[in-house]
Length: 218
Image (cartoon, rainbow, N blue to C red; front, side, top):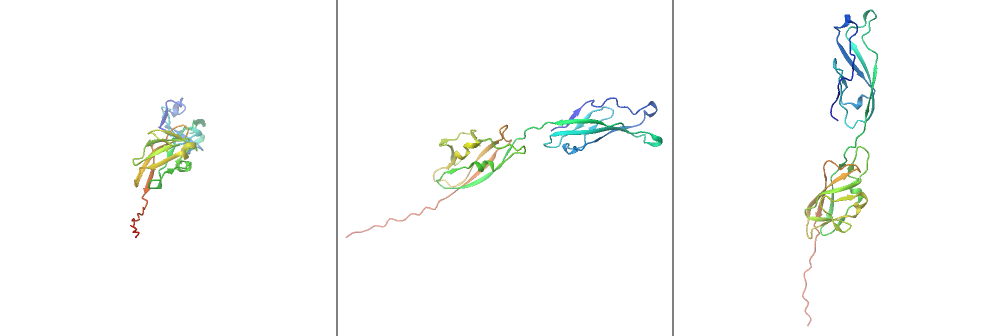
């Protein structure tokens, strides 16, 4: 999250009586939940502006203890620290986009390959703990076709999780070599920010040709 600034959060900032008006002031902030911040939150003097930047993926509640300190010291029974004020910051969680991970498979020339659901769930990451809900085909193979339950798959077609084992790749007839397609993962809320690639290696099949032998019958 970007840096947050709450203008004028602290008010009534004063060093004390008139004879202490030249003392300098600063705020001290402590918290047992400081790991929720990218750096220690700050409070400006004399503006009272509260500023903080959250740590990546931080959420939950942070309680800050805020005290105002002057440079007058504590000699002769003096006091240089105000009573603590508690500030509670509630950080609401937001859904992070999932991540699809590239993977590769091998297939023999002129044969079809059915995908397994685990081919995709096993290459899916979601920091929120969400499960793969569906995929979207964002780039089609260049040297073959994708079929879903026997029907040609179209560009940007979405395929639900439970239908992924009906997804078939079939290379062009007599083609062998590299092929690929790309897909976006969806966690039930949003698609991944970038596509993942499925690399397909179509391996040639050795074909044995036997010569025809002429047979002469007298």
